[in-house]
View (cartoon, rainbow, N blue to C red):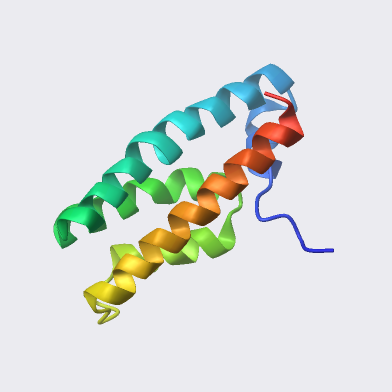
Length: 116
């Protein structure tokens, strides 16, 4: 069986296990990180705007880290530091597409798990 790609451990520590507070954090994560920031990341990719791409990736790190999404955090960091990592645009484009797909799949799992 595959290990879950996310965890509520950090958020549960902050909320002392309060389910309503956990759901509040999850919905905020959906709105900000998986909504606004991911949309900005995809738009920057579509516009080939590498500066905006780095900024959007940077903004996503906190939310992704909070939910223990280690593989997705690594992808966001590669995108953010594309120049340092000497990535070409086709590689970045594929990273963004894979990340978008992964995060949408994880979102569906979270919704199912929490029944929200």
